[in-house]
Image (cartoon, rainbow, N blue to C red; front, side, top):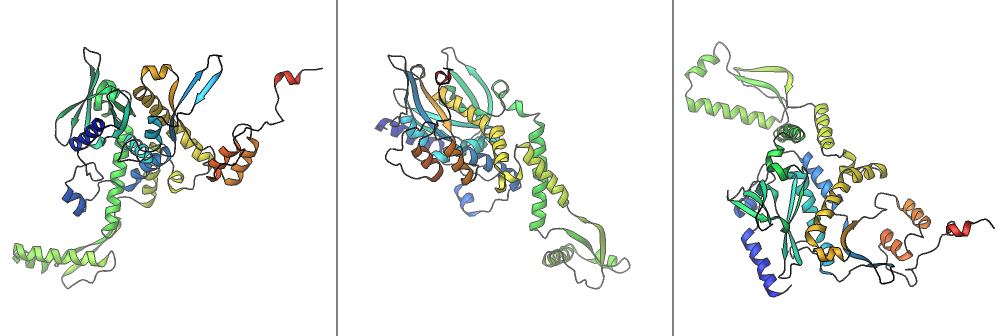
Amino acid sequence: MNLINRVRFAWNLVRRGINFVDSNGNRLSWADWSTKFIQTKHSPITETTYTAFANEFSKLDFYAYREYTDKDGKPQYDDLNKDRLNQLLGLRPNPLLTAHDFKFIMAYQYAKYGNAIAVINRDVNGNVFDYTPLDMANYEFGHGYQLDNGKILLKVRNKTSSKIELFVYDDLLFLRQNPNQIFQGDKSNNDNATDTLTRLYDTQLNVLLNEMMQSGEIRGIVEVGSSAVGGLNQALMGTNEKNSKQDEITERIKKANGGVLVLDAGEKWIDMKAPFRTLSVDEQNTLTKMIYSFKGINEKVVNGTANEDEMEIYFNKIIAPFAEQFTEEINYKSLTPTARTQGKKIDFRRNPFEYVSITKAIDCAYKGAMYATKNEMRKMLFKFGPLEGGDELLDNLNFTTKEGNKDE
C-alpha cells in the first residue's frame, strides 16, 4: 500500500470514528461503554441465531483465481497466490480485521439487520486495497438513484448525526435479505410479519429472564394493615411514612427470594391461585423454537449436537444462498471488466469433511483418491504438511475411458 493509500485509509478511520454500541444498536460514549452496565431489551435467543449463522459462514474460504485457455486451446488454471485480492480475502481485508472477522461481521450484520455493507477503498488505479464493513445499526436506508454521468448513489440517514449521507454504489459490497429494498428502502420492511413476531417473542422471553434475575415470580401480595385498624392507620400516615413502609415491604420481598415471608401484626397475606409470571416453561420452549424456525435454525445447530444431515440441511438452506449472494457481489464490485474478461474470478470453498466423523472422512478420502491428491487430503483432514510425491493424482482402476470398454 503506497503512502497516498495509507493516508486515505487513516482519514476514513478518523472520519468514521470508532463506534461503541450496546446490544440494542444504541451508540454509546466511551465513558458509558467502558463503565456503565447497559441492560439489554432482548433475550439471548436471537443473538444465538445471528452468531451461529456468522460462525458457519466465516469458515468458508474465499479466494481469487484465473481460468483461461492457452494458444493451443487447452484449459489453464492460475491460483494467483501473490495477487492482492487473495491477501485481502485470505489474510486481512484491512489492517484492523482478520479475514475471519470480516466474514463474521458481514454475516452477523446481514442476519441481525437484514443488510450488510462494506466500503471498498481503491487505489489510484481503481484496484481494491481494503474492505471496511459498516455497522448497520447506525443507518436507515432510502432510495438509490442514478446521476447523469451513470454513477449510482445510495442515500442513507446516519442515525447518530441525523445527516443524509451518499455512497457511490460501485464502491459498496451491499447485501440485502430483501431485494425489494432497492426500490423502497427501509419501507419494504414495514410489513415484515416474521420480524414483527420475532421481536414480539424475543421481548417476551427477555421479560421472563428479567423476572428470573429479580427473584423469579411473585407468590403472593402483602397487604399492610387490617380492614378495621390498618386502614385507619394508613389514612393517618403521612406520605413519607407510607413510602418508608412500602420500601420496607419491598425490601423484605426481595430478601425472601420467593420464599415464605414473616408478616408483622396488621399485615395480611393474600395467596394467588396462579403465580404472577410472563410465560410458562412450555410457552418459553415454544417461543424459542419459533424464533429459531424463523431464522432457519434449530437448537441442535446452536448447541453443537446437530448431526451430519442436519448440518448439511442448515448449510444448504441458510449458509449457501448467502455465500452465493456474497460471491456475486464481491466479483462484480471487486474485479474490473478487463479482469473478468481475462477469466479472473472470486469463489468460495468449504471443507467437505467438516460435518462428518474422522472415520467416515478417511473412508471418503480413500474412495476419492482420484479427485484429490494425498497432500490435499492430509491438509483437509489433519492439517498435516505435504509429503514428497504427494501432489500427484492417483488413478482409480475401477474407472476407465469409454474407448477402453469397446467389445473386441
